[in-house]
Length: 171
Image 1 (cartoon, rainbow, N blue to C red):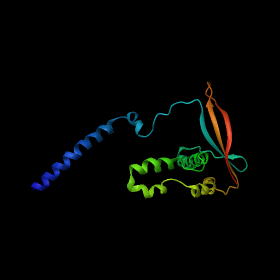
Image 2: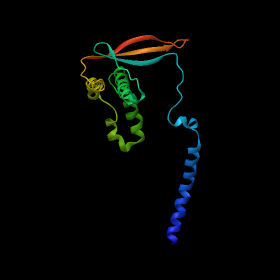
Image 3: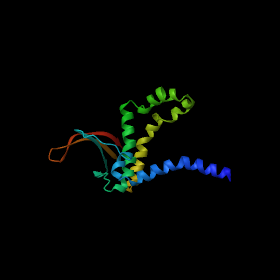
Image 4: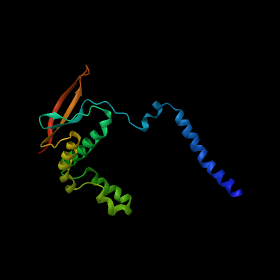
C-alpha cells in the first residue's frame, strides 16, 4: 500500500502542474495563441509569386483552402529547386549542414550527405513536377511554363505586376 501511495504522490507531483497549465491555456481565447501557428508577416513593397501555365494557356489556380496542401507541394519544392539552380546546382542547406551542423553533432556526420539534395536529385525534379501537376490537373501535360512574377499593391488596393520572368520550362 505504501508503494502505491508514493507512486500516486509522485505522479500527482509531476502531472498536476501540467494539468493546471493545460486548463489555463484552454480558457484563453485563440487570439492569444495565434503565435503558436503563425508568425507576423511584415508588409513589403513587392511580393514574389509563381504562375504555373500548362497547355492552352491554362493556369494552375487553387480556389479553395482545402487544396492548400497541393499548392504547398508545388511551390515549396519549386522554390527549393530554383534556389539550388541559382546557387550553381548546390542545395542551399549543404554548406550549413556540412560546415556547422555536422561539427556540432559529430555522431551524425556520416548521415549529413543524406540530408540535402544533390545533382541527381535536382535532375529528377522536372519529371516529378510534371507528374505531380498532371495528377492535380487530371490529364497528362506536354509542356509546363513557370513564371516568377513580382507584384505590388497599389494605393487603391489593386494588384499590379512589376516584373514577370520565365524561370523554368518543362517540355
